[in-house]
Image 1 (tube, rainbow, N blue to C red):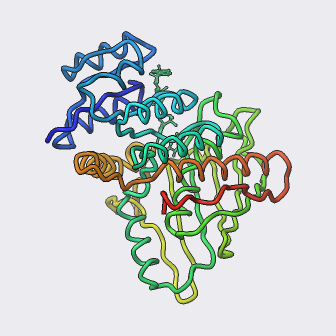
Image 2 (cartoon, rainbow, N blue to C red):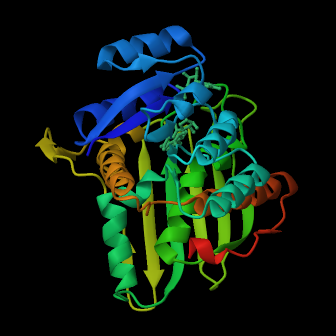
Length: 334
Ligand code: NAD
Ligand code: ISE
């Protein structure tokens, strides 16, 4: 059975996901798209033989659409995800699920009222081969109980529109989800340290930042976020356990030996670093929609990431350790 998908938001990642749904995933077909930039939507639609519709609501309500992909700007996500739930349709929403914890909770409540899972959130690192291998080793107890995690999230540069809060809301939100998933534990407090700022940044930005999380089990996690590191896109993660450590592998690359040196390239952006993860994320999502059994990152994971992100932004502003005020997880999401 082919899963017919409607896409809301045909910008950068929307176009990338449409390409993978068209060229990589079998049994999926993008049949309708929309964007507030109608010309862009038309152009994308004509490239794949889909219909360009006027609004997100029209896409959700289109009877040919089995499942909705939301890749518009963050503040518009909640309206579309809630609309899809109301229509009883599966919905994949790029991160963030919503830009406020309150809206995330409305989605969680609406999904529970509907009675089964419809929502998946785009935390694609859970589909990365390296992270999956790390999780396997940790789940098998090969390093004993986890005690400490060290993470780094480095981007080569960011535009002037990027502000200090986005280091958490847009960037470290991926580590927030990955840490919760790898440890199968909850983050209970957050602190932000602000080192000397790089000269290679726009004036308003605190860059780099160091985030310190504590989990319910007492694991301490440090995340360095450095979004103007200049040299490339670099994601690091290591767990220290009672009897060993496990580290995320670097992406494979050739080692070029020449002129008295060994050189290995560093990828330049998240798109190339996580291509395979994004591909697998959509292969698995389409299969789960076809089978009526959504299993990827849930609306609850979207809510949890949002609450932890809020605590971290508060910690940045206050300089204090901020407790995470999260509701109890409903049985629906266990
Ligand atoms: P973008 O600006 O390139 O594209 C967003 C598109 O949404 C634009 O074309 C815009 O016109 C359209 N849009 C805005 N409001 C709309 C509305 N109400 N209805 C329909 N269309 C609307 O942005 P992007 O980089 O593609 O990011 C989109 C989303 O994907 C963001 O939430 C972002 O955080 C997320 N994202 C996730 C990852 C990841 O690694 N998982 C990477 C990049 C972006
Ligand atoms: C971007 O929005 C993403 O989601 C990328 O995965 C992340 O690495 C980058 O820092 C964000 O800006």
